[in-house]
Length: 462
Image 1 (tube, rainbow, N blue to C red):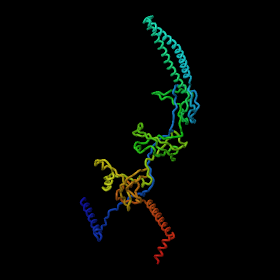
Image 2 (cartoon, one colour; image 1 turned 120 degrees about the vertical axis):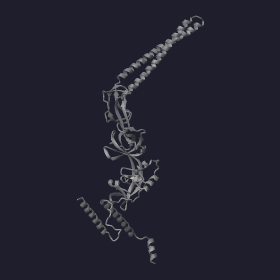
Image 3 (cartoon, rainbow, N blue to C red; image 1 turned 180 degrees about the horizontal axis):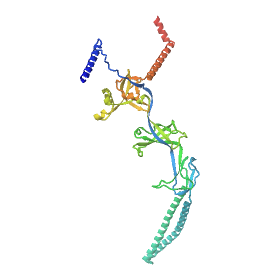
Image 4 (cartoon, rainbow, N blue to C red; image 1 turned 180 degrees about the vertical axis):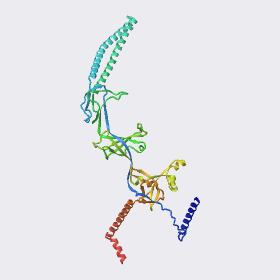
């Protein structure tokens, strides 16, 4: 049975070869066996355009006043009076709160009494010192005539020194008490807290009757209220470490508030932190960047969240294409000509052969006669939609921009075709250009001939 099946298969193959040989054309170069034609990739294209392009750095941030003061107490006391409420407008020197001053007044009265006591003691010590001085002088005269003993002379001298030291001690105590009086007078002033700036009571943390304490090393103390100057606002943004080298003071910026995400608010970069901050629990480093808000809009309030866009580069008349048109290809997948041009353009350090082969090169594909051609490009600045090309393509080139699946499969020499929708748009565009050309030609024909044209016509007729 197996032998019979083998004979049938061989006979079928022989018959097929005989039939194909008989169907050859007159020329032996023509064969009915043709390889299936390559299926063209459907692509979308766009021509480069000349336009303004701005490179942006984006970062989140928080709105805050440029000038904001936290009001705290410098003494431990109870709030006796607080004539302001949250949201009140205050001027420099206005009363914000008054603290209980009973203890300070009592200490001040005690210090003044001590001062009076010491001054009286000094008034008593001065005559005693003068008497001791007279006694010593008398003993010196008596000693000259041997009318006194040496021991008696030393006793009077000791009394003089004691009187002098007592007077000096009282004078030092008086100085100390006067200093204490000054300190207490300053504490008395601190019981009356006035606004140091013009602004708004943006936050009120304490109430009348509460006891406020001063700050120490381990205790931040009581913040009674916060005064904010809302005439000038700023944004404290957090710029990623990848983008921060491009951010400089003086650069133009815009911020978008969560309350009005479609309304840009002008701003300017004021300062960039020299040291980064690592977010807790995240392996991300950001740099604090301050931006001055250049708007007096009352809707911009402290504590609002904002998204910041900083203009770090700018081109007025750049040749641009959509960013999706620029693709990355490994150098081993590109022609030697493209790779050589890339190496000639690069100013790079020596790389190992393995690293060179793994290196990616930025290219674009241009549609030429229904075929994709690879172009080495030199990208410039880019925004979220378009990228500047300094070299590689020219105006009028049909740059392939999608779809993504087709871009991923593109190779140099690959057959491509436009979708029906894109073909229709291309034909309509060509028709509009032809109509415009014809219109211009008709306008030129309708224009009256100039004197030079008439003179030339007459000379030709003669």
